[in-house]
Length: 217
Image (cartoon, rainbow, N blue to C red):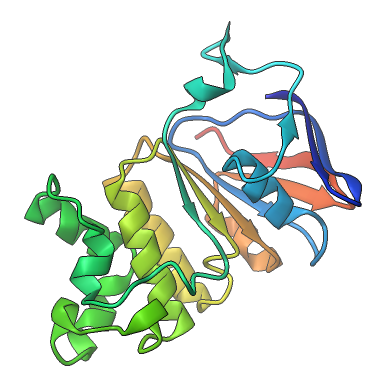
């Protein structure tokens, strides 16, 4: 992407970047202080905010924005994204084409498996309207498992992992690398320790996005 610009009504341009590259399978951390524009960037990449680009290429060939492919999005505030029913119902989301193996892989990769072991009924536990019987952390893991089952080429995690303990964040990212090696992950964060968990680190400061580190190993 070249010449990226994100604008919000009443605020003008909130994010700007001259050029950014998403490598297949790369895990990217976008870190910055609160209000730096991290959520605006996530919403724009997901198509919820207007984003202007001077050029978009895939494998060095110019393409339309629709060629980016499938995006998985898990936002910082998951309430309202779950319905009444069981955990399994909410993860599958009426998908009839998902095998038991795919389901179990997503459950483990999202960190939901340990939670299910402690819940009476496991994945058949009823979570109530808007998932009110689950904590925020449990509900975020549920939404992550659901997003993984959609088979995204890129997964956007807006502050999703920040509310979890450092060890839990590291474990989830390790599972994602192992089970979905070609999926690009872009996660926003404000904890500077998270930078060591990712292949690439991008810094967002006062709306200006810059690349701080790239590990090509």
